[in-house]
Image 1 (cartoon, one colour):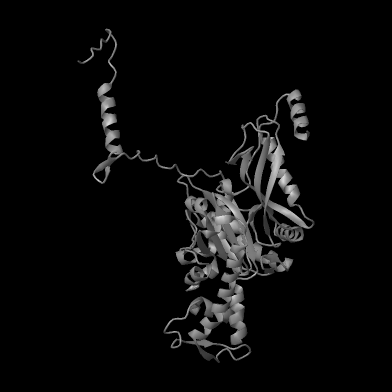
Image 2 (cartoon, helix red, strand yellow; image 1 turned 120 degrees about the vertical axis):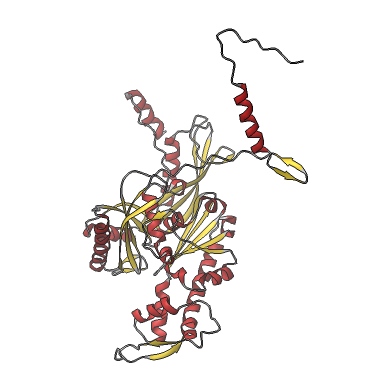
Amino acid sequence: MNDLVVVPQGTEPAPRPARRRRARRREQALVPATHSGRSVALPPPDDPTPPRAWRQGTFGVLDIGSTKIMCLIGRGEADGSLRVLGHGWRRSHGVRSGGIVNLHEAEAAIRAAVGQAEDAAERRLDRVYVNLSCGHPESRLFNVRWPVGGREITASDVRRVVTEGQMRAMSEGRSTIHTIPLDFSVDETAGVPDPRGHLCDQLTSRLHVIDASTTALRNLETVLSRAELKIEELVSAPLASGLAVLDEDERELGVTVVDMGGGTTSIAIFGEGHLLHTACLPVGGMHVTRDIAHVLSTSIDSAEWLKTMYGSAELSADDDMDLLPVQLIGDNEHQFVTISRSKVVSIIRPRIEETLEMVRDRLESAGVGRATDGRVVLTGGASLLDGVGNMAARILNRQVRLGRPNGIRGLPEDPAAWPSFATSAGLLAWAAGGGGALGDMDFSEPRPRGFVRRVVEFIRDRV
């Protein structure tokens, strides 16, 4: 028997038909699939992810490498992408293995690269975000405990934990660049991403600290000052590369970025959405170029041309048939000798094998658990050599893909060259606020208003 609903006069009935239509639409969305003849209820699709919100303003970044110095000027767009307004680059001078070895030459190269970017963007820079690849960066993990005493955890407690980790990491002649909280434990509850507001007796944090030689950093600051630039922030080069070429799922599941640069090869291991480990190997694409120049007695420029145009890490069936002209050092510019392409490959292959074996050894000794078992993403200029991906998959025994910067507009038109821009693009994303949980966390809190509250906070922070 149907119930009778009495509606008072002057009162509009509830819009039941509309609700029924919405309910029917939802039921249709929930039961579209079958499995073995049975209906399977599926949840409605998630709302589309809103575009990333960037910091306001225009940012300048400077990637100081061993083979090139790159400057990008850009900004974040409303659609979530990054736009490069101007870029400039120069061949590196006065830089070796990421460190400054000649202040005058490095200053001139930096001025030229920055000036080219400024002219293209029609803007002037006085502060830049700079990659950290000098000073033999080191990556270490620390577990730090801090007594809370059963009260609510505040931002001050978290800052004290981070500060304690920095104190433990301090060593003579080294400066801390990043202190990254990987996770927190609230008493016996582990895996707390943000402990503020929790009640506990003891707060524990696992911290990732990256530091570098203080002297090398001072030389970097000096050369930039001579170029009329100040360092807005130093950012670990492998961290920046990972920010440019990885998506969130890869960083969550576990992935290793191998940035094969000119003078160094950097490694960044990501897992659970965090940067877990970094390493920098003193070998890169320029070592391959020098090997070719040494064995063939040719110039560095000729060796670089041979590597770029005909280089490979793997032999092919036709390599013996391909003959290449090579000018010997000191000979007349019109006199050449002829070699086979297989000769060039035989010079390149051992150096690439050595580099990847060093990467494998570092991954095995990283001490970050199963995070190193995930996919490897190759980026950087040396990763563009034919055959490097296949060789990496064989030596590292992992899936390998080539990484290119994501979500950035205005790079040079040739997408094949984009892996060379990974660090620069990552620096721009960092400058625009895209670091998120990958970088140092902000645990600031409002300043106490009254005098008494300020005294209480002062005493509490020192007890």
